Length: 261
Image (cartoon, rainbow, N blue to C red; front, side):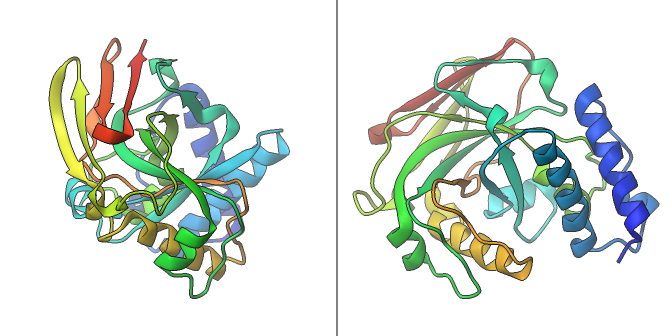
């Protein structure tokens, strides 16, 4: 494990990068012995400071749950981050482009929990049992660590590159549709960029939520009732520039639109 002073120093760097919308050198280039537990420790320090400053936790994001995303990043295992109340936008919103760094967009499903969920042996069926509804969502990626050569350690420490989410479309109960077959078309400036099917997330998006509950158990935490869980992207990330318009068409589950200004 890294020394507590190093963990606190890296958390400070990432907080400064978030405020200034800049990018810092890779953690693994400067601390080659840093491991996954170190990166989650950095993320926890960063999270606790934000909570102490008055931010409210509304959910978690899971990343790298599909082969498409693993291939796009060169990282072969899932990770997770936290989501705060000021990072959620409604369908049709205009998002401030300057708030993010290395801006990309992903297509996902969000699970909203009716009951708590904990590990260490949570299953897909447990997730479906405690979920109030599932709704289309877009995730905005926001990377404060240089992208080239990064590892999962760098990504986790950077709150799994989470920047924000846009919720929209038509919410459904988890047993109302076969979630594996939810599909989406992702357009940027009226041009189709990506397509995907939700089964690309570990063969069922609820499996990602179960993975998260079991991973959190290792850190002495559990998912709370009311939390929003982004289950992971089933398309590759699409780069976004200032002025770009985004539309995700989920077919029977409706659409999500937003613009970056």
